Length: 89
Image 1 (tube, rainbow, N blue to C red):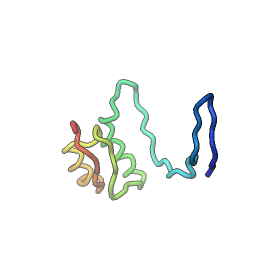
Image 2 (image 1 turned 180 degrees about the vertical axis):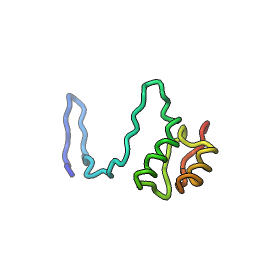
Image 3 (image 1 turned 45 degrees about the vertical axis):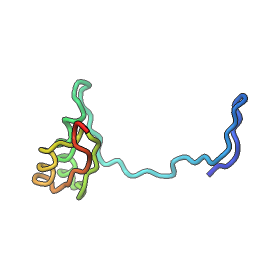
């Protein structure tokens, strides 16, 4: 952690500056053509993680990735509970 002040012109800043110290492992990257919306990839992502034995009990997702069908199919097909706000919220 770095403590001190940063001067830029007439503005000053005093406080703490801390960069990231660690990150979790990246277990999967999904690459598609530019015209493919990422919200359509949730099922494929869950399937790929399952094929590689990387399924979690819960998969946290943003609003566009969660639909009623995926909430049910995630558990039925992959044993994964999809957690996140439903589309349109």
